[in-house]
Image 1 (cartoon, one colour):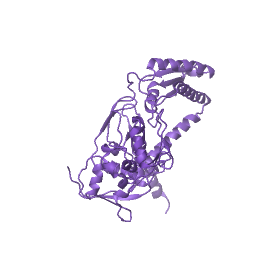
Image 2 (cartoon, rainbow, N blue to C red):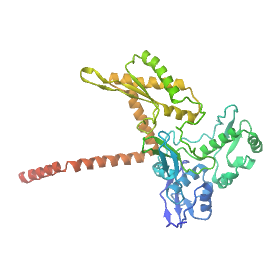
Image 3 (cartoon, one colour):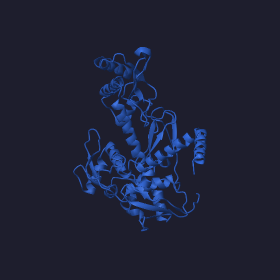
Image 4 (tube, rainbow, N blue to C red):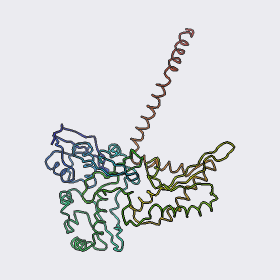
Length: 420
């Protein structure tokens, strides 16, 4: 264990809207996990207060706010964080990431928690379908405080469907049942899939979507999302790369997929009068958009030689691995429909190129910009924009300083020669 000097961290804006200060006094490097952080609070290694200085008991925090606090303290280095290693979701390059340290913390520090997706409150007020095929099941949850959830936070490995633990998890209703004892007995008899889906839903209520690290692969540029903190009560990360097809997986291999794409393309290209557009099916890593999202398809307009003669034909590329990744992440879907929609979308780019204006491309870029603004927050976007302007201006003056010396000399001569 290593000791640390007393530390007062900047004010932290929480998902609930509460703003608090964290003081760390003589802190030792604590192990990862909720239990270790709660123990550190119990031993007086941390204290919380409002901006006005009023003390805040850690037990009064919602579990969601507590997990934001835990991730933040981990990012600050007062709690140990082990690196996560997993392959890039697009190309398989091995990535080693410290998730909490890689989270974009600016929105939490400046209060820019206003994104419609990343900061959308969990729907505690409505029943949620657990999405278990063949076993219809709905659950209604309520927010829980650290005090109420302590038993689970301190020992998640001892989690059992008992009445007391159902209360600690915030389970208010299961289908039509509202009595904790009856809910617990129903969960004791339920399938493993229902229990796993329930815990996954509870985890979503405990960890806001913003507790994610967006990490770009240095090899292909794909955006990989790592949950933070990595050590959670009910789940973990898959260890295998999602693009490496498993034996017996219910998804077409590359040859069958290519044949389907070519069959759909012949019909769609002919109907659209785009027989001159080439088609390529890529089996390796997909190209990514400017936001790092692997593409389903892309369009290259080709090149024109003199007198408007095509030197290289326009081409549509379809990326097999992205379709496979959708299957692995979201489950089975209508593959043929998705292929057709992707081909038709890329032909929209082709028609727009021929017309000289592509509104679809502009909207896609605008959407990427909105997502980036949501992730970084308005304050950080402004800071980076100003820094970019300063670098650009500085670089401009660095490259053109001889000209500016001449301008200065001429200006001084004009002043000296002007009548007094």
